[in-house]
Amino acid sequence: MKILILGTGVIGTLYAHALSKHHDITHFVRENKLKAIDGKTIPYDIIDERKDKKHMNTEGEYTYKCVTEITESYDFIMLPVNSYQLNEAIETLVKKSTDAKFLIFTLNWEGTSEIDKLLRKDQYIMGYAGGGGTFKGDLLWGNLGNDLCLGSVNNVQKPLLDMVIKAFKACSIEPEIPSNVIHWLWVHNVGSAPLGVGLSKYNSLNEVLKDKKLVKTCFGTMVEGYKICEKRGANLKYYPEVKMMSIPFFILYPMFKRNFKKNPIMQRYTAHAFKAIDEMKDNFKQILQTGRDLNMSIPNMDKLSKLL
Image 1 (tube, rainbow, N blue to C red):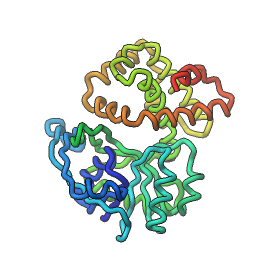
Image 2: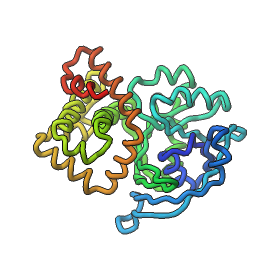
Image 3: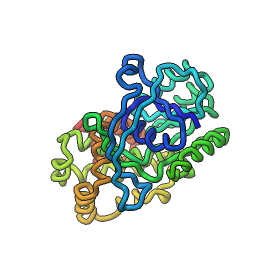
């Protein structure tokens, strides 16, 4: 398949590397970046969860192929952007290719009403990455999961969903297809946004982990956020992360610390989080406002909001 990826960020590059083994991958970049990026080869150090444990740590190189205009037909365009950048990204690309099909690869809290003003319903599906990391200079330091989330919002999107599933499966990435992708994205958003606000206090994971009161407030905020998701119609029984929050804090806290300190995959996810703090804070503001609009009891959210 011919796939266009917006930008050359961590997620776009991770999946470009993975998909390029079986597909023709091109990156759409701004004119001022083309000369510096097109044809550039970067090194990568990736924990590749598609492989067995002995061979997960992989090193190699990836070479970008970039364009600033859409003069060819692509099977789909991947949009791995921050949620607050999504509408602008869609507007830019639709002007260049009216009938393009999109994999919207970002978190969501507001539903699809704004997207539906920009695209026909058959032009997009939703999803979220199963990897993360950061750039250390030119080195891509990350992890690539053997799964990710994909979903259609309505029946006319099913052909596009089936095609994108096929593209990832060809590269040994098995998509998770939730019964309601919007609800999945809401729940995942709630599970990450509070930690982003917490990280912003210190800009250091170790300092956050030492601050037991802050971690407890973040966890309490997640619980409140899950209740907001439920109030909006999400069935929480489908999400194991929600059940985990019922574990007493004195047990959960050391588990949380150990996972972030000892798990190399989690360390790379966390490195990615530091690059996305602005997005997580913006998402938290939306969740907080929804809680207030619904007149829900959200004392932890109110407390955490003082860090904004």
